[in-house]
Amino acid sequence: MEAALPQQNARIHSIDILRGIIMVIMALDHVRDFYSNAPFDPLDLSKTTVFYFFTRWITHFCAPAFVFLSGTSAFLSLSKKKTKKEASLFMLSRGIWLLVLELTVIGFGWQVTGVFNNILAQVIWAIGWSMIVLSVLVYLKPIYVGLFGLILIFGHNAFDYVKSDSWGHYKFFWMFLHEQNFYQITPHESIFILYPIIPWVGVMAAGYAFGTLFKQAPDKRRALFIRIGLGAVLLFLILRGFNIYGDPFPWQHQVVWWKNVLAVIRVQKYPPSLDYLLITLGICITVLGLLERTDNRVSRFFVVFGRVPLFYYILHIYLVHGSQIIGALASGITKEQLARQAPGVPGPFGFSLPVVYLVWIAIIVILYFPCRWYMKYKLSHKHWWLSYL
Image 1 (cartoon, rainbow, N blue to C red):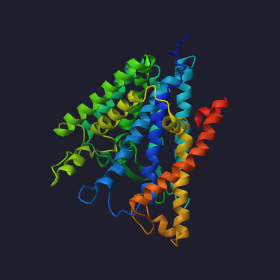
Image 2 (image 1 turned 90 degrees about the vertical axis):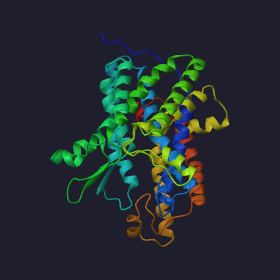
Image 3 (image 1 turned 90 degrees about the horizontal axis):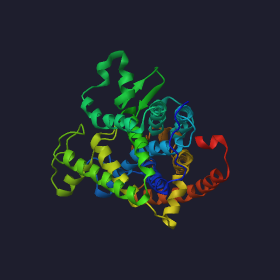
Image 4 (image 1 turned 180 degrees about the vertical axis):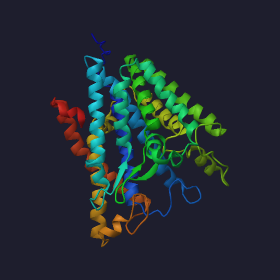
């Protein structure tokens, strides 16, 4: 007889709040991508301003927290399954489903022309593959799953020197694992690996093991989360401050003091370096501890988004990109001109940062109502397919 997983039936309110916060922040990044007219990379210290830098940098928390909490939620939800086999099959099917969505519904949402000439392998791609791997790892004790995750998180930067070009015909394999790159499949079709699966698989595995800590009393885990989070931030300051290890691009002294601060926290996201994960997850875990027992109007607002993350994610892509297309066409810009204006690349359509923030706020307000409806629908219905959206 298969061993049953530990039971954890109570929904963790703080997870929903934090996940809702990062979902709202994520929309800011995509609104900036499609609506900004800035003629520079917001993280380019030679051109950026503090406001543009932090508008982009604050969104760095989204992917790590999203993937990490997906692992935590997986542990808490799979602990309700009767057997590990049942839990494994659910993770496998959900991972495959996410890959299908990424390559179809989600991929279409990023397109202007509607033609899938270039496949974008982004965060849902990484989460899908991570869940497939986790479907195997669930047969192990959570502590071993966590160790596997930490090994990937702490060790993958040792292989930064390995480049896919050196793999010859197997170039795609290394890109799939550990290198952001563009791969030409045929003369007309290509794939852009924005999120190679390492160390994202490790982030989800670490989040899965982290879920075991929620079996402790709220006050005890609150203190534990804060210590873990601040410890990760301290380790970041040591490794990054002295350029010891953890990021392929050491920070360099700037001409003004505030740019030195920005240089230190400007860490690699694709793939996420150890330093990147230490500061983002460290702060998120600290906030998670601070959110224990939080229940007010503001927290309930974010809970709406946090309880329907995939529904929100798909909806926000179509709303942000669709509104940009409609606005651009209405202003006289052609579809061909818009197609050449890639996300984050200035073109004929765009606005200053204050307008970007106003559009972001409007997007969030609009999204709140369908997300609230769907959250209530999920609470009052028990259809099997609700676990997949």
